[in-house]
Image 1 (cartoon, one colour):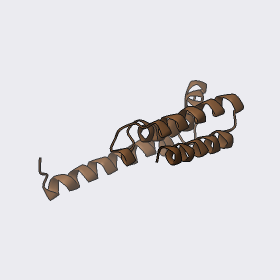
Image 2 (tube, rainbow, N blue to C red):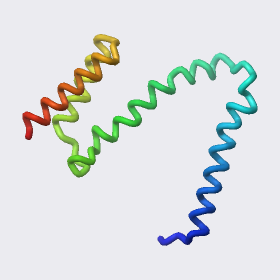
Image 3 (cartoon, rainbow, N blue to C red):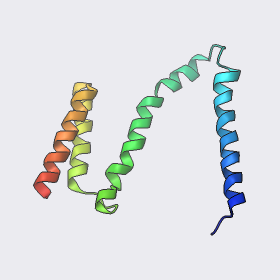
Image 4 (cartoon, rainbow, N blue to C red):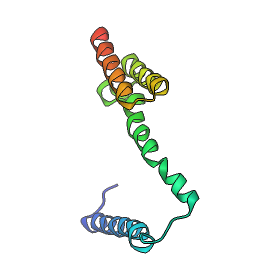
Length: 109
């Protein structure tokens, strides 16, 4: 499907207005009000959910292998998860996964 320049600019404009309205709803309209406790509890989990959502596609469908999962990345993800759960230390988990990934890539070639 080929889109014309007008259609592309219309989509950009609509998405820009939508993004502005979403941000306005939190910052402009309810920014000075106290949010309910259930909303604050839900917002605490946002950073924890964003990182796995960004990393998971890189593990399951890595671009470096043409979209095929490989043992090095799966092992690194498993080690990172295990270290994170065992130590509750983000830095230890990330460094353990990093070492596992590079060791796995070196061993596999």
